[in-house]
Length: 180
Length: 180
Picture 1 (spheres, one colour):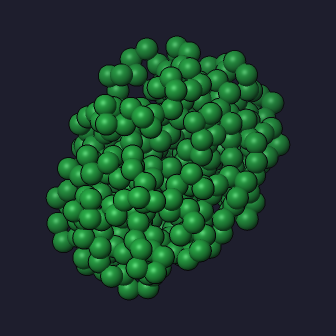
Picture 2: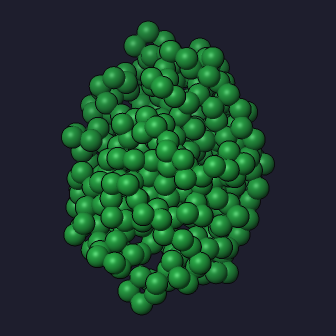
């Protein structure tokens, strides 16, 4: 994984990809699949929705840390598989043949096979909305990230891979944050 | 526009498209471009980030209503244009040749040219995060919605249109909400 400037990390979440979120309590690592994410600020400040119905919830509350990993479209079956089993009785890294990589700042692991990883600290938990608000503290991209595609959950069990890319950078030049 | 069951409306936001959000104060209608959105529940409960820096903010606070419209990739130049000018001095419906359509429940207008529209009520304003939490109260799709593609903001002035679609419905059958 190559270091990605933190000022560019929001660009991993803004397009709305399916994500994998890792946690670790002691040596016990877990992964959950999360599509309900958002960007809240460029810093990056990020958010996702989860609650006690997910096994990772307790780890998030206890440790206040996680990693948001971005899988590529060719990993979709793994990502769905992760979403339909529970860390309460499954070692998901082992079951799905994923490689945990030590993160720089947080105890939760990066996922080597993903396009990118964002190490995050929980900065707020808005309980009435099951919302975890996160600050990205370090970000990483895979060397081949440019050749791989994010994918998006539609919500009905179907998914859409990223397609054609196009630019309006000239038109938006006055509105882009510094450094992107 | 055809009525879309509310139970399916979250599927318009979960994939992370660029959206247009309309408001109306009296006869004064406005539109803003918003990429920082999320799904919070299937009901649908939705959220986006905005603040006083957007002219629509005041209308949202005053009226507690808006419409989230989903533009298609062929509308991207219009969507960017809407994002770089202000309703304080511009009638954006007129400037961009968009057609406001009377909504069924809220005063904010639908946008006829979009793929879909969700009429929303503000149910919470989490001020410390500039977060508006919304309840979708009515949803609509264009007759040709299936032939058109959503698109996603990367955040650096580039965009990605939806590409290949694929299904894991069989694998996910135990996890899908009723009716989708």
